[in-house]
Length: 212
Image 1 (cartoon, rainbow, N blue to C red):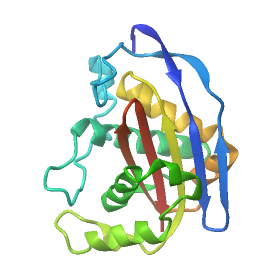
Image 2: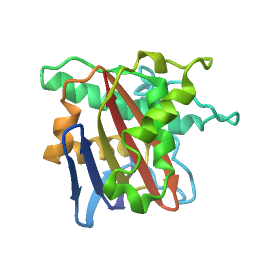
Image 3: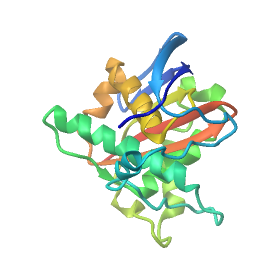
Image 4: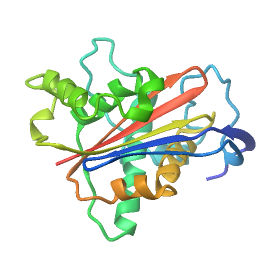
């Protein structure tokens, strides 16, 4: 895939919660060169710039489950699906099975990304608030919340970049891979995964939720 080269700023704040301990990790501000076409920073998430970028979404594009009647921006859905796809690709590289996407779990993760970001260091709302959100999904059309027995882990990330969906998804997943605690969550003994994404100002926020 050929994309116009641009310079982007990357701000990473990674936070981790496991079922046995609470741990935080922060990364220093750094510059990196990323692939992607330059977009207006006011754009929620940039559209794929090429046929190849679009085809990379073909196996992971999804219709997001939401209790909000206005629905969810399709670019957000596609970004969430790409993050799940890249997480499963990494698991397969480690000789592990793929995790099953759970749409209600993604909804709970997406809702959590919109909370007060100053509380992230405490993983506010895990697991009780996530479980409460999941319970609101029970019995709703399109919900698969009944599959979830228990939450088993949570990863957070804050990311600043404009670019393609592909580069955004890779940025989130690579941050987690390069942090030992978050990596352990990604390769843990789970059955389901849900990913939520939101945007505030120039920052993107994403949560991975893991469950059995």
